[in-house]
Amino acid sequence: MNNKISYLLNTVRCMHRCNYVLIPKSSATTRNRILWIGRYRDPLENVNFRKLFLNIFTSPCGSSLRFLSQKTDVFSTGAKIEPEKGAEALVSEQAPQSSFELEKLDDSGSSKVKPVTDRDELFFNSLRKCTCPCDALDLASESAVSIKHFTNCLTMAWRLFKNLSEDQQRYEKQLIFEHPMFAKICQQLLRDARRMSRGDLVFSLHALLNLGVPQNTLLVQTLLRVCQEKLNQLDNRCLSVLATTLSGLDKDKNVSALQAGLQLLVEQRIPGIRDIFILQNLMKCIGKDAPLFLKKKLEMAVLKEIDHLTFPNALRVVLALVAMNYCSVPILNACSKKIQENIHGTPFRQLIVILEACYSLQYRNVKLFSALADYVNSTACLWEKRQIILFLSAFETLGFQPSELMDIFAKKVTEDPEFLNLKNLLIVLRVYSRLNYVPKDQKHLFFETLHSCLNKYLPQIPNTELLRAVYSLCILGYLPHRAIDELLQKDSRDELSGQALLCYSKTVCLVAPRLHSLVLLRYSFKITAKSDIPLCFINSLLFVWIL
Image (cartoon, rainbow, N blue to C red; front, side):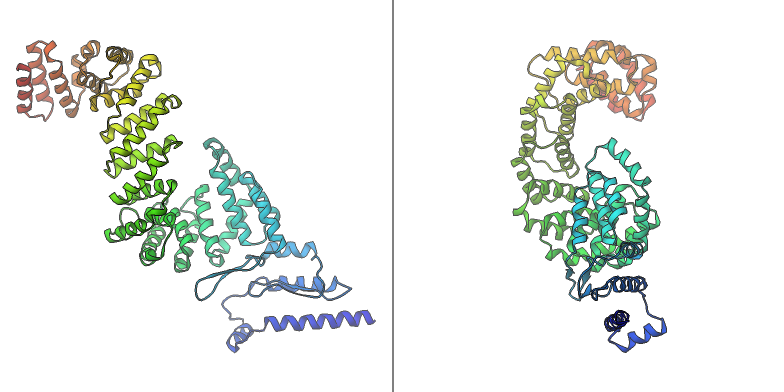
């Protein structure tokens, strides 16, 4: 009897404490609670009361209370005991937002993160040990109890996914979409999108899109809409992630509205941004359509921090300028200097990207080009022949002649011509002819090798490509007789377009000393009749030949 009275008194005391916590201070809020017209009613209240009673009646030795709510902290009285497993499962099923680690924004916009519990620490330690995307999803199905847990699992899945090879990514992507927990996480994000913290919001959007969730899905469009609503609350780091995400999306109403709002917000915050990484992400996002004054503001902000530029950031800034279609010579000069200092060990793809960016921005820096060419020369034995061809092609578009590299490649061609397929052969002929470079050593052997390769592909090469190949060899001072005979056939001439006929006329002029005058006249009239090439141009070619 005394035990029952004791339990009853403990229950009354606990209920009294709960009522004290839950009773709102203002009378307006009280009326809303009484009339059931409040804007939001916490779905955890019933669950918390059940857990409260479970905690009370399972403690015969003393009183214990653990009250979890989105709007209050974690309270405990008396001795701590482990809650029952069923109660924890009930909370994990119905709780849409974490009560263990809660991030709030005060009026000043600063974030306050409450200390995590041992359970959170155990969860994040387990998350760091995941080795593949499905491990993170398995952990979410076993241990995640809050929206923060779900978003962190999703972000970890993306981080592990992006480090895989292309073949592995295709396989893992199928496993991710077939995983039952992935659909549950997407449903949870859709349900709690407007109650997510700003970091969880932008990182979830970024991870979902990079994992391959289509842009036109309800989930992605909802997250984009919520980002519009919370745009002013995003800090610079979140703005950077959002800018990176938007730069890879197609234009639609939500994306366009978000980019317009982001552009206005960036214009206000540029003076306070001191991180080049954030600046280059914003530069990529605003793109080519940004007004010129905004591009200049971003340029000045980058120049203020140019002394802290690192090699990875230098590459990113160059690509950001390409995305903006804005050639800032001071920034490019500083980036070029940093690239030259750290050129050794740079991967092949990054070298090609640097040359392509210089071409896109119409930026010419001979010191940078020479440093890149010297580095490739010194490590030529480590590169594949196909990679050297791509280097030479990139230099050709820039109008830069890497003499030593071209000599080294010519030697490789004479030693092993079998690697030259039709595509590579045409590139080599174009590069050497446009740069007007003849190898110093074994000149005749190099031309004979190219000629033999060209003869091998004569049955399958298109007439237009054959014309270009013959023209390139003629520019270099070598006459490919068999290819010329094939080109001079009537059927080949009839298939050429007007632009190709112009090249054809130049080729005829180059090989004219070996042809009969009547043949040249007949070809000239044929060219004039089939194209819009002026007759005066044909007459000038004939005049050159006569001289």
